[in-house]
Image (cartoon, rainbow, N blue to C red; front, side):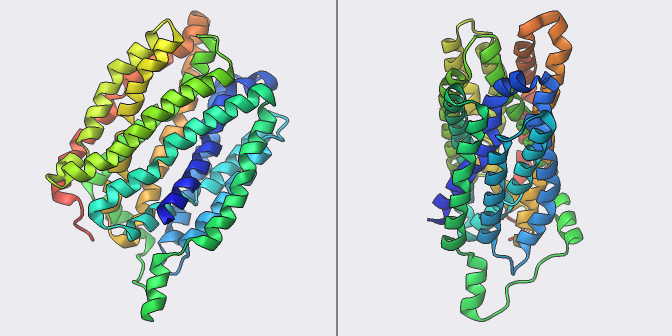
Length: 413
């Protein structure tokens, strides 16, 4: 039951994080925002505070006496409330501050959840368990697009924010009263003190001393940069280039993007556990091959003249680009000691979200503004072409990291 509740929490996490993508174009028209401001609002404003606060919150989660479910409950209440407040913004600055609040709340979720899951399941099933939790990413993204798109067409972007934000506050009560921390439960049942924690400096040195971890951070961060950037601007691409409404994009792109992401994320953990048991290197083989194949399939999708054909083709790069989630998160947990697991997850999320969510939408928006004088509405399409080719970067680093796993994975407990 704990895994299912945490999955629901993570779905709320990504609904509230990603709904702004489908609302971006209506917001931009209402508040008269540039593409650079759209990128700042959808990416950096959230990511900067999410990543910075994620590290100290993760150290708090790693403390033996911390109740991780209650930490997650408080975080859920904060980010859900701030999502609702986005609907009250009357200008760019107010909206930016509300999005910062969402980032502050969400900083308390995933590091604690990763640490909690790693304590609940044996290491040979860790990739599948974390892959299951990571299903919150595509499910939350697709629900954010579909629900947000339908709500904005009928009620406007302000009410859309409020409607999706408030249920999370109620869910926070479920997490607070239902979930238990196994670390605290074991300590109470055996009447002994929990194992001692690690000093922050020692934990960071332990994390960064792993060459596999460094390569994995580069691979996952570049993958997130492309994923967040493409998701934001693909929704705008279908509105500008193919003339769809936000509701149509949210429904059809959301279904295709969600189906590919769900299938890829679910299979990623299964593949990693199965083939990683034969040879540890193969934990990341599917991730590397998937990213390699994203480039040609994505370019083909963005170049299709009919939006239906484009969506059909884009299922495949979405699926292939999602094959890294379970293996990546399980590898992070397996490359560090148990006392540094939440911090290791936070370090990964620091780079993924600061570089990926923070800079992906923003830099793609800036590039679109640069290209717009010569390409007009086609500027976003060419930005997406560029992003597709760049998927070769994470493919290379996932492959390089995989070569180190036989030596380093699951050697620290």
